Amino acid sequence: MNISPIDWGIIAAFFIISLLIGLFTSKSAGKSAKDFFLSGRNMPWWLLGVSMVATTFSADTPNLVTDIVRVNGVSGNWVWWAFLLTGMLTVFVYAKLWRRSEITTDLEFYELRYSGKGAAFLRGFRAIYLGVFFNIVIMATVSLAAIKIGGVMLGLTPVQTLLIASIVTVVYSSLGGLKGVLLTDFFQFFIAMGGAIGAAYYILDMPEIGSLENLLAHPNVSDKLSFFPDFNDMNLVIPLLIMPIAIQWWATWYPGAEPGGGGYIAQRMLSAKDEKNAIGATLFFNVAHYALRPWPWIIIALSSLVIFPQISDMQEAFPHMPADKLGNDLAYSAMLTFLPTGLIGVVLASLIAAVMSTLSTHLNWGSSYVVNDFYLRFVKPDASDKDLVMVGRISTVVLMGFAALLALALSNALEAFNILLQIGAGTGLIFILRWFWWRINAYTEISAMIISFLVAIFFEVINPKFGIINIPEGMEYLKLLYGVGITTATWLTVTLVTKPEKDEVLLSFYKKVKPAAYGWRKLLNRYPEVEAEQGQLPFEIGLMVTGSVAIYSALFAIGFWIYDNTTSAIIATLVSAAGFAILIKSWNKIKLF
Image (cartoon, rainbow, N blue to C red):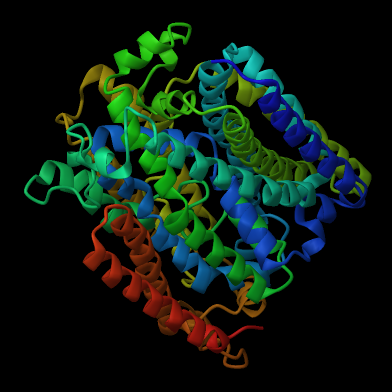
């Protein structure tokens, strides 16, 4: 496709503004490691919330949604919609606990909650495992999306795309630290959202589509519209709805949707001004992420079924694309090639923004692990702030380099998503319980981490080759069930047969974080002088349920309005409004310290 000078001008302006933000914040970011990785722990909820949304507004997310919709219809999105449940649990139960801990990274939690060599091993190993290896995989999937966008829309080779995206992102991330990332995310979010809505609106007006009404009535689309899979077909209901809602949200670990919060979500909560700002940021994120953002992507995905009903149609339209990069997820980028001058520049800038906001967050988050939880903790405990910032900037460059190399080997975003889910299967419940059950110890987490990884390797690498366990076609969800069951049984057994953490460590954690005392009674009974924190756990779980209903209702309401189903749209809108009204009324009743 031909990109006009106007479009190139819009893209160039976007790059310049992003770099200027990095330069503007570089001085304050370089003052100390706390400023570089936590922005001085003084950030407001609205900036943090928008940054969380911008980070998850990755270029691979619309590709993933397009892949899901083309294969399983709108109802296939429950594979990630279900994570709203853990998101709302984080909002009302865990956000204030994270902020109260006053740690620098979520990995520092290990030596706050546990002790000894086990805690040190967990912190150091996961700093490399998550901050380097796991983080590189995530960034590689984002870079893969950039490759497909660059190839389809700009005719760039994979290497050319990665060089451009990597250099600009690394420059402003390494200069500005977290504050630079947050401010750039804020700017990039509105470009990304505006570009997605503008693209959906224009595509609906294409002659091949005609209108929203025509799209919804098209035979390639009409059977893809339901919010729920066909309940007469359990082969669809179990993997698309029951597994995500009943098991996946609490039992698996996935970046950005960790049970109890973690990773870059925890990093944002830890950098908030106070507990209320941490809660407000995560609430805004969940509302925007699940209710407001999906529909432009879904509309474009449905439209692609009219223009490119088969993968072979995309292969014919884009013969220069490498064969291993062709898939249903390519359809999103393919549809954007029809946009007119001006709008294509905005949309390209929005896609570049999506790539860069996610990469920059993961670079800062990953380097925070390398610096705070490995280098400072194990290599050079007396390192100066200048040294730490320098190591952070160097690790940013190295992480991006390895992610770019891995991206060249990947072919599909959904494939990577499923592998990450399998690796985290069975570990999620630990992250929920470790704040509230004194008996969990370092060996609980070590055993879960090891066994979940081995089970994932077995089902993703060994079993397909040797066929040791029969997984019938269409029942791939059994791998997740096996992973959750084996891993959970292992870590529960290890927890009960190993010694608990020392009382002084547990009491120090309890006094600092002040979780509800339900799972700490046995310990606290031995120390009557320690005041048991009654907490508001039932009230908080009630808010979680209310918030989940409100946001799901908002998601469905928007869909019903789009589908012109007025009665259902009004009902869903009223339910959503009632839910948010309850949350607003309950806001000042949340107990803070």
